[in-house]
Amino acid sequence: MMGMNPRQMKKLMKQMGIKMEELEGVEEVVIRMKGKEIVLKDPAITVIIAQGEKSYQIVPGSEEVREVLEISEEDIKLVMEQAGVDYEAAKKALEEAKGDLAEAILKLTEE
Image (cartoon, rainbow, N blue to C red; front, side, top):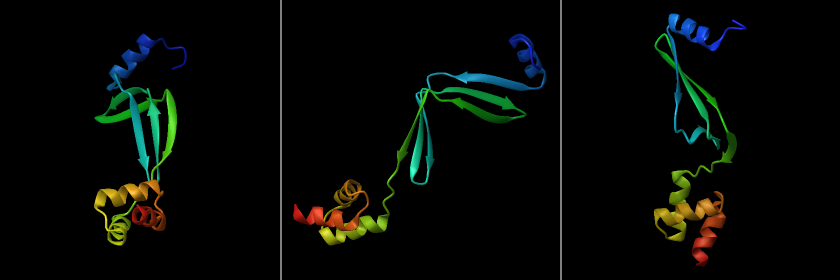
């Protein structure tokens, strides 16, 4: 298929039942994994439909990896009980303390 012009390529793909379309206006794609996220900014996305199956080809403009802090419900409840605060205050304190229970409780009880 090397040396094939784009017109011939489209015709061949149509004969094989393969459709391609560009997604317009996509600002970012987020891939969530345990403990981190990969954020693809300003991606060019092509949707390929072949034999009833969709595939997405993503070419990012830029990439950012973020760590995600996962705080368990048990930790939030423990901070609530120990510091005598509501759910939101306990969760916020744990986020600010990067999940450190003792630091969150101390911060809330010192205020």
